[in-house]
Image 1 (cartoon, one colour):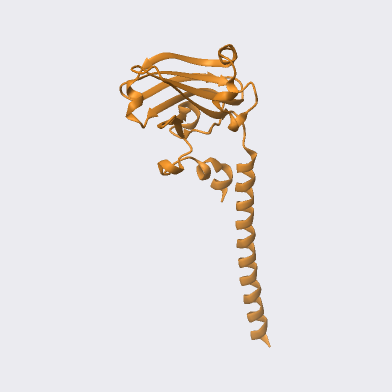
Image 2 (cartoon, rainbow, N blue to C red; image 1 turned 120 degrees about the vertical axis):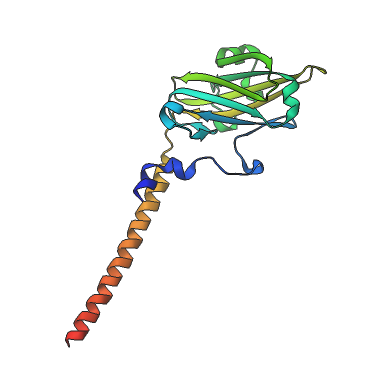
Length: 195
């Protein structure tokens, strides 16, 4: 119980889900990629996608699932969520190119990634919501595809701790009830035997 209370992230961590249920999947028009964040200095090999739990260095990895992306020119950015859209953030919410540039904290120049993996480091110094943006341009047709993936950094999720606490408290209460019931039953048998 103590382990559940102290490490609720173990209970709620992303892992072992199918692609259909995977919240780390990014849609790029009719193509897909997988977004993962790591904080090796503070969280070892634990993976994140909807939230990066602590401020500081984070390594972001985008793996292409759709092979078509390997032949496209891809630009990746991370923007502050200046319009406070949080998890509901969409490409249309980002505003003009000037507004996108002003909110950008990370910008990787457009490039082709034939191996299908884009990786970058960033030192997050401000907690809050961010919006990752991937822009893929088809080199043959010139068609541009956009994908955004909102995530938060350094925001403590009290709900997880409350759920873990209530779960632990419920288990402790159940254990107390069963133990005291057994104790009362054995006490009644002992007093009955003395009559």
